[in-house]
Image (cartoon, rainbow, N blue to C red; front, side):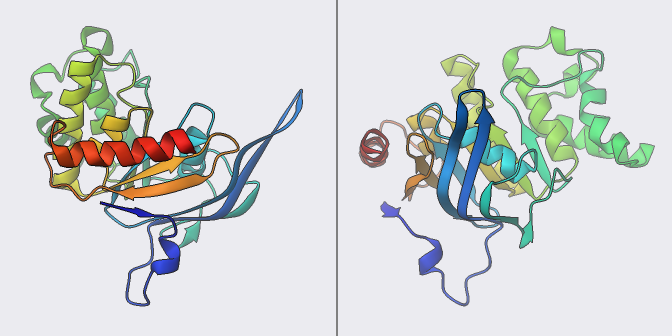
Length: 264
């Protein structure tokens, strides 16, 4: 376990370029009370196929950062690149999973997963192949004909994940996707997400308020300071998966992350 406060400075000439790179990123919103600075001087590099969790208090700019990587918003200053190119807007190489599932209630599970493929004008036979593969991957083949109101919260979130994976993005962006679930379902879906990620190996950025969730999932935990948001520290999680939440090693990482979080 180690704390990396300036990963970009330590990069060698032979190390591959990051998949996501933020340098001196700032974001200011105009409000009726005047300017509000959400992010100020944020620096972060994320490697290809890396699973990063982002942890911090409410209002520290976690979701703002995710929205800018997704292309839904843009920095006020600084540079933000994905795969070496500036982020100019949403694109198929970035898939987003939200906390509220964002499923179409009038479409079946099957058609929800197929939606992005049909928008991209993928052929019918290839769409069937991909959707069937996604249903098998997330364990929902038996409910393919069901509608969202017939599903549990955990099943809805699996549909959301399958719909994003169906378009095969390079980057998977998740904004507290398990935040509305009870603890048992949340832990089950954490295991399910890791299983899927290890099979698919996407670059993943996962926003959370939970210290344990951040450690269970992340290769590194990005701890953000209270607003204006910036990276307080990046904690490497050098623990084999699946991770034992009761082990001394897990507790040691938890103490390190907690110390940074409460001291930021």
